[in-house]
Length: 306
Image 1 (cartoon, helix red, strand yellow):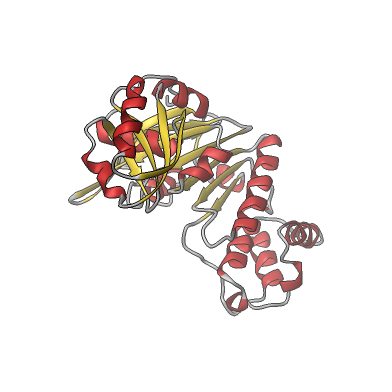
Image 2 (cartoon, helix red, strand yellow):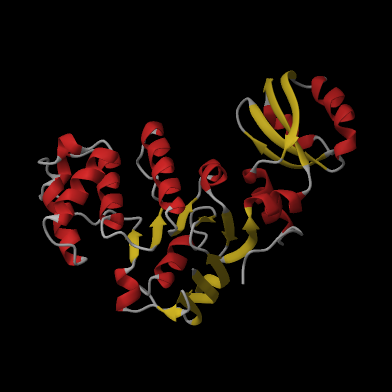
């Protein structure tokens, strides 16, 4: 289990992380979510003692971060840190050696992982010759090759195409089922909704929502209206029945002040737009996040934070 309590970090005059607490058990995936600049990367760097917190603590199965804990931890940084002139397989083997994985085991594991992530054919390519997505796969292999108990992944889906994202989803579920405690950060809510058991959403360096995914949905306790339309969607900004709207060019997710007035809302909407889809459904995570930010507090519900 990874347990972080009351983490705070200030880069004068900005408070980057303010009283953030989270926990993830073995065999579960926690998504550290929030918009760009929310404090996710700073939190991850404090978890791994890359930078010390101004206050707060981090424990791994009850002990503070140490060389022993580091050896049991896999880290994928947001920035790519690979030697661009080095060849792919040699790069992976080099980092494996730094983690104490010797030959022939390191080569066997590297070849197995390259096959699993569909980059075996690039074994002799230089890192600079690989696509951004394949460089990201290489970094992921480096983070798991020493078979860590804890995985901390900063924006692991960056640069991956949809097929590669689906493959990584599958791999992360397998690692979770092996008992790994996994934290990954992202600003893409659908990724977290598909993959995570638990969530910690931060904005402006503060936790605004945390708990199990099911608990957060139950705590939100609202339905949303999913819309598709033709016309100028900016009219949605003028309808007083709406509490929150997440609007795109020809679609939107809407939270009403009073869900029982959905019929009235549809009548009003149809007088201003050509409505092509009107569906009442459980609120998606992005809508819950937007509403929680707007209200500036956590909704009632299950909390998984310590």
